[in-house]
Length: 449
Image 1: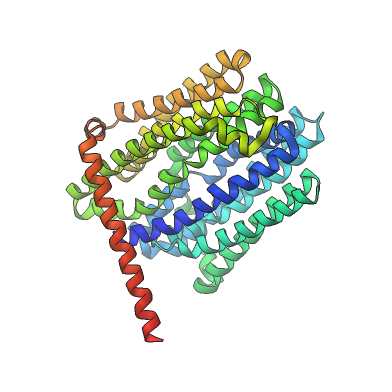
Image 2 (image 1 turned 30 degrees about the vertical axis):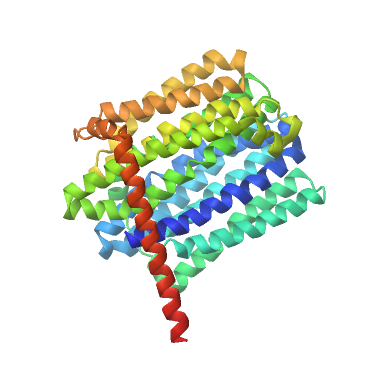
């Protein structure tokens, strides 16, 4: 438990930095460039996220699982996964730029935004090193350089805004941030493990990894498609200004997705080990996770709905008049999102990858149909409604297609407020113990000096 909380703590530092400083910086840029250019930028982000999902190849969870299960194959797994992601990244970059060139050639800003943003896909191939540290509960070795560079470049972006530099300069600064981040992470890994550890690419390993990850590849792309397709459809069916307003609200709502993501990354290796050693305790941990996810996300939704108009007014000003109502609807997607992340991790540990794929297909069908019907008349509000319904559809389908027979039981127990309070108290005690242990270690180190 101590290692999990420590791992979660480092991940939380990263997410909190992005939640507060990142939100403030993004809001400054949004106010500076206006909803039109902000909408074009988010079109580029949405397109590259969807196409870039192909470049991940579904390897993020599989590589962690394989590194935990077969540490003796570490070098082959890391080398092969890095090679696979770089090849897929180059292809994805080319596709993104080609789509924009043929569909948006009338506006050079679309092409510039997409070309610069698409390079992020290639750089993110080096997330493979992150997988290694996740598997060993040592995420601080990635988080520390990431947060340091992130804070530095947020300050640089704020300076760019204060100096009234062009939007393209801000885009180049964003790209430079990723370059510096991944250079540091790669250098650290190579320094400790050696460059030769990255020269063990094996085609047999590639075939094996892809045979395990292909369904997660489709699931990942489909998840990104129903997360980002609303923004592409808003750009096509309405105007960049309406997309800008929706994106401004969605950015605030989606920042909360960091919480279940942090927990999922931190506890996946432990769940894999726990299933092998103590199956009853493993199911109990999943049950608690789902229950805490449901009640925690409900609290967030209530608070954010109440504060939505005030918050968007402070962050974005009068240029984004509909952002408040969009946020008050979109934030309710957090409840099924939190639950989905927990259940999807459970399905991954169980090896039931297709369940995630089927549920995601159902979600994207619901999302596309609602957006097509409502966006022409309701704009960003329709996209927010579609987001809530589509995530709820995914959560429902995950329970319906669960082969283990535990899914429905998890949901029944999730609704028990008494058990939720007990879970919160146990979490409080675990956090308290972890903090006390950390302070004790710090005191011992200071005395030894």
